[in-house]
Image (cartoon, rainbow, N blue to C red; front, side):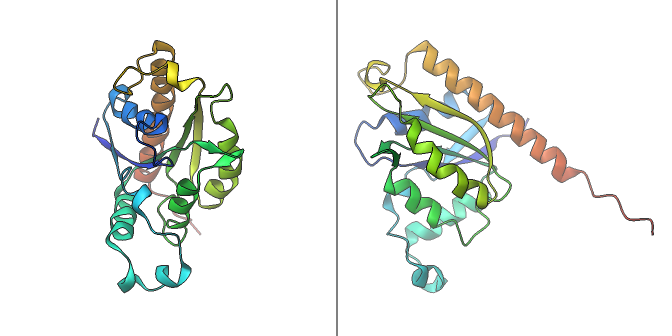
Length: 193
C-alpha cells in the first residue's frame, strides 16, 4: 500500500497541546500515513476574502497551507473546545480552504482532547455542517477526556485506551481513503444511447 498524506489541522496554539499530541499519534498508529501542514494552521492570518480573492497577495503561510491541502489524500482535525465550540484557529484554517477544493471528497477525521470530562466533544458539532458543506467525508470522531492524565512527561499519549481509540479511528480513515481511491480508479459507465 502506498503512503497516504493527511492534512493536519491543529486548533491549539498552546505549548504542550493535547490536541497537537493527538495529531502526532496519527502516524504512529496508522499503517502508512504522513501528516502534513499541522504547523501551518496556527500561522495563518485571519481569513480575509479580499486577500483570498487576490492570490498575488497571499502570505507564504496561506500558500503552503493550500498547497498541503491540495496534495493531501485525507484530513485530520484536532481542535480544543472553547466556550462549547471549536477554537478560532480551527475555524480560521477551514475558512482558508473554502475557496479551494481542499476538503472536497476528502475523508476527514475530527478529534479533540481536553482536561475536562467532556473531552472537547462540543467542538465537533458546529464544525460538522461546515465540513459537510465543503465536501469533506466525515468518518469516526475521537474525544479524549482527562487528557492530562493520559500523556507522559513529554506530552505524548501513552494511555493504551487512547492509543487504541485513535488507532481504530485512523484505521477507519484509511478504509475510507482506500474506498475513495477505488472509486476514483473506476471509470464511469458510458451511456449507450
